[in-house]
Length: 305
Image (cartoon, helix red, strand yellow):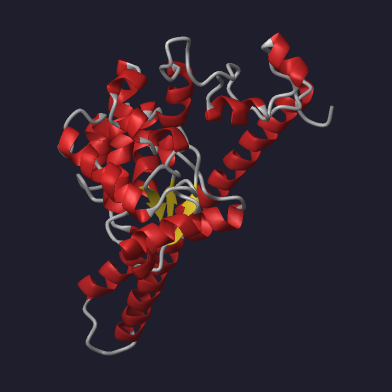
């Protein structure tokens, strides 16, 4: 008898594709090549589970995560609403509990982890992904603490529709008895919510990559979010230069003060030109980078073919 998960997934796969075992352009790239979720012994396949739960990107920078978040810091869903945060659904486990500005990404609890069979009975999960599964599930113990959290989770589609508050309480209590907090969890889940801007900084300096994840779709959004401090700095410099100008117009100015004011003015001019060159250079680099990728994809037949 086929498992419910196999039926749901097979329903999305064309018959000819299922027979061939390959992929074509009509199937989303996120769909696993192997459509079976369990192997012959009934255990969930490692390939499927890793696709759903893998956090290798975060584990690669684990020793720097203190810069992006605090250990165990996961606010309940009602608290997220109190902070006026916009909760966005993500299917990427490496973005689970990552936030920027007033937005936080949360990955829905997969249906295969919402049953006692899978999360409590270790026979159904391969050992190499057991810590990923328990770690991910433990974040939901903090996200859903009250009936109000449970209601919000259902509104957002974070939990399976068939799960009731009573069944969630029973499952979470049994999980806590079997797995004490942070015991047997993947090391990523020692930390809770992670700030995206700090993750991008870590990736730039640790891996020399442009970013961990970019939420920007336009240049204006990028420059507004990352260079607003430039305007604050120039506003402060303008105030200081205005004060110097007023002071120099009085009869109490010494030669030393006049030399200092002249040097500061030259420094401000140089800083302004340097900042403009930096912004223009960054914009040009980004434009050329995306243009190069677009032309390369077009040449390979991936765009406009």
